[in-house]
Length: 194
Image 1 (tube, one colour):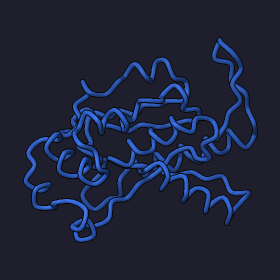
Image 2: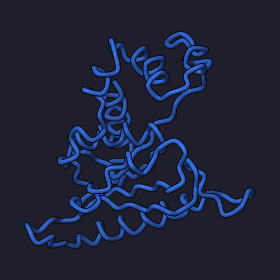
Image 3: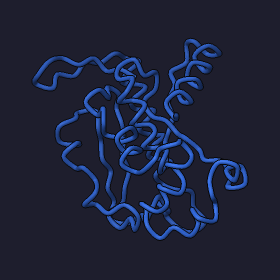
């Protein structure tokens, strides 16, 4: 259900701005949606990253049981209360068969920067497939010791340093891509693409 939404928004953007290079940033669950989209569309995906934003709970009350979701104590309970109900899956197994963000990881052809801290209380490092960053030359991992779950603050009043890093990263990737550099990964030459 998410893939057609992303595709539609990208098509609309491409029609409005046909010469624009589209870059996006994803956070949290949006990152899973991004990986699904990029894996499914491979080199024909017209972006380097994506962001999916949830609407407020009030907008969701017609679709899901918000009180049940808020009472969830585990990811499994939350996913059952929200995602299975929202997208019409009978159970989590069916949901994850269709929505595993790494299902088509071999087809992702754009550079991706992943940021996750070692002290993230929601996503333990043992659940991060770190081997991906050894075997996929377009995948880059930045894993600071501290940052919590997406905090990455220099101090309480500061903006997230991760946002600054992402902008620097995207600027570098776009500059690299626009110059059309070629990289040899000891297998076959790969032209930089976005």
